Image (cartoon, rainbow, N blue to C red):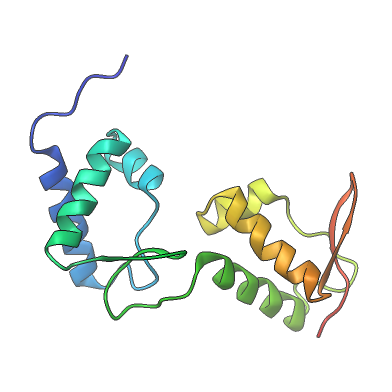
Length: 145
């Protein structure tokens, strides 16, 4: 059973994140609570306290459907960034017509998001006709436009 974090750990985490924000490292939004927790080796409740401290000081803001963002930073949802990147790869030929997309798990790891976020991005690409799903096999590029 993991030991409890010492009192005030959330303040150390919030100061570390605040320094990174000042450096401009989070222009596209903060990492997920889970990622921050893994990095600092603390429970999600400790991470939430650190993020709440950053929100109270005005260093970050929560944007519905997007997550925690640095005010003035990019306000695009993560699934939209994934869609844009996949479309770019399709248009540039890195993912040619007929190519199989990486699995949801691989893309989630690559983009640092949850599988549900990847699933939404791919579903949007399917709806727009850029990707087609073949049940039990995978998803494939169906159009380069």
